[in-house]
Image (cartoon, rainbow, N blue to C red; front, side):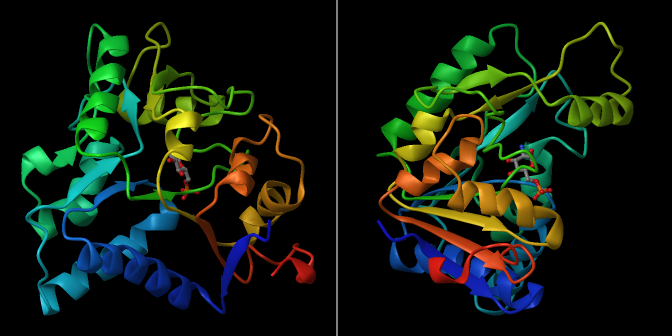
Length: 248
Ligand code: GLP
């Protein structure tokens, strides 16, 4: 199967294209269920959607937005909590009602139950129309780290050590207290009707090549997207710089 790869000529074009994919989905389907991811890659595209909305408000009253993953065992007041990032970067500007912004909690004494409830809430809304995914430097999707089985469903994953260390420092979490990442599983992600994988910058070029040209292997979770029937890989030229040109 030929992969759907779009390469933007520069970062600005990349951000704009991604922003319009999401805005377009909302305009075409006012009841859309859209999964968002957080991180450096998506920040500007959410800012552009916010600008479009401020200039030309569109109907978001029936749209459901949710985050693909969340940091566990930190306060929501922490700036790096996905809930807080998404609210600041997009949700508050669009004025999405709280019941239409679905996020698992950051704190709980029963994360297994939270995972189940999160997944059930999305299923109740008819499943996911569009899932936006960033690409981890090691090929992770959401918080599904290398080695996560493709059959995984919403679960509490360990974090990679670098990220865990950073969050620990930023939140003052003592070494004895475990952090984690609550995330849709690989299987849930693959059930989305449409996926947009976004990756930009030369630091992503190596992992983009593995994701698209390497074997489909749990060692690189994002490689599973080669098998999705409706996944677009949106890259900028730098992220695409190691790809064989006949691929696109
Ligand atoms: C974190 C998030 C992922 C995201 C990834 C990419 O690990 N849990 O959902 O896709 O970062 O981050 P960045 O865009 O900053 O490279």
